[in-house]
Image 1 (cartoon, rainbow, N blue to C red):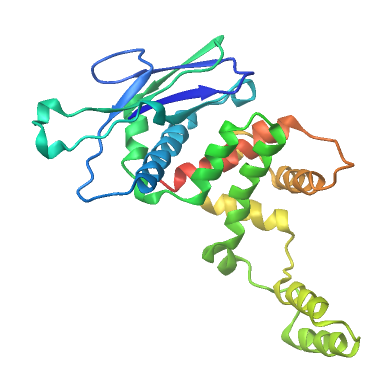
Image 2 (image 1 turned 90 degrees about the vertical axis):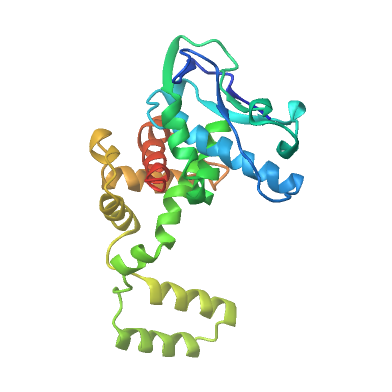
Length: 274
């Protein structure tokens, strides 16, 4: 199986890999032995996940994403399978993960293959957030990239710890009961009543941006200090996400994407492999 990478057409970055035997190569080698019969679909999903995790490792220390990004893809055109039981260990083929940029770059990044292997060895921690990060890196649209990265920080709000940290506390139980009586007497249909109940029961004293920022601090994200990310930064990220849903609003802050949202989302995903 050949794996290679490409990059978006505006790239100004070029990547080379150093491993134990060679320096400045454009691919790394991996071998996977399946101890049981596996369908082609499951095999493809396995290698796709590996490519996504390798991409995360490739981008882990990249601070120049505004000028281009590299990512791994599986080259199924050159795919080959073999029964290893019929061959000696010296005859085994090796799968490849290669990396290249689709446009020659003015800035070369050297990545140690060990950093990539380290994350790939923890593939059991693969999650939806890794997939969203991969989709963001692949995207040639900044708005699409923004959406995928926002899903990553939004996922924090659905965690068990987040719920423990920010219980519903805006209304007291007695106030909720009184509001429920009013809603029932107002003649709303069931859908509207359910929506209003949900808002009331889950409302908190702290704002959404305050809760998210506090949760990111709890995660110990270093990028908050390194990139000077504040509660106001989170507020702007949420606002930009909401504005993108309104077709008439064409305002888009690229700096907010590359220097606030991206480092937050990246560190959240990387921490999942710690």
